[in-house]
Image 1 (cartoon, rainbow, N blue to C red):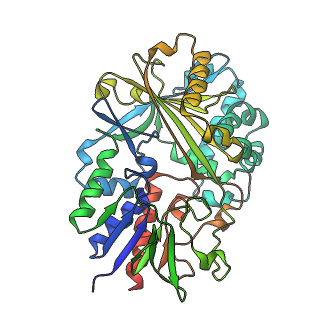
Image 2: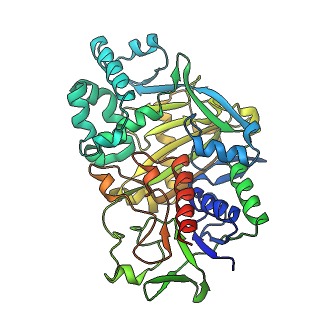
Image 3: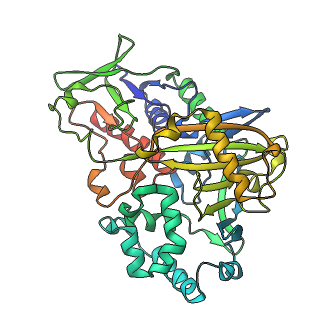
Length: 438
């Protein structure tokens, strides 16, 4: 008899688990609360083109993701490009892509720049970043470089990523991040993108899952995972019981407002650490379409002064605007901690006004009349806070409840840094646990 698996969440981890399971003869049902699939990889459709709600790109080290792209026949759509970075300080953009440009960066002395280069080179040689799990990034930089390098280079980056939690972030995360972004030549970092957008990947996965007999239901929120005598038996949706032989939840277990109810764990009869351990932060991304480019060539701009957003990503400095009906696309990105709840609940127009006003202050040649349109995406619990001791909090795929599994940004492949590739690895591994259990 074909086994049925219910998957809660239609993001990359959930879709990959369904793709793997249907390929092994399982019947799968995906329930996604939103109107579209993809999770953080979901896209807008604007003026006849598709563009991600949150910025995304490929790395050459994304082995499982690239293998999946091959299997789905999308490899010819992948294009590798040079992405340039910059740092905004002292009222202007300083490109940081060539040795000459690095020497022109005004907030570090030449001796500090040499120290920074040595620090980065040593970081790239670290084979196991997880060994740094108990050391804070601040402590590691102070010890391996110096305070000036921390204050004038890394501190603004950590603050834009983790806000008031920056001093708790582990060196394991920073080391992993440096390694991930180390594919850099004299003209910038080499990144990949799927022509037509990552919606092509989501559509291809959806099509393959459906062709194999899988069922996908959007606009469907699971209220409860049903458990009988220590075994998951299905889910409840608006009072209706849907039976299954196994359940995979991709929702962060500590996300109390969104995750399905699991009374057996909440009442203490289970031992899985669902309510404590991993802490999360939210994401907010304002995507604006402009009639002309914002920056000359910079793709990714880190910002040192205080602004509502932590980074400016000009997508059309990677993929030309001709792919987007001539629109120039710019992301203004922010990570939000619990104390930033006001930005999560404010009216969209208020957030857009705040961000566009801040952008005008950073770039005197820019004014809001050049904005053709804007879209706002915001979501709670999109990224773990990779604080010291995180590796002890990583959630296994199997829970103490028989046939209940977890896979997502809280899984081992998404440590010490989360990525599309990590979510795909988590989906594959979780599906493998179910297949092995038969």
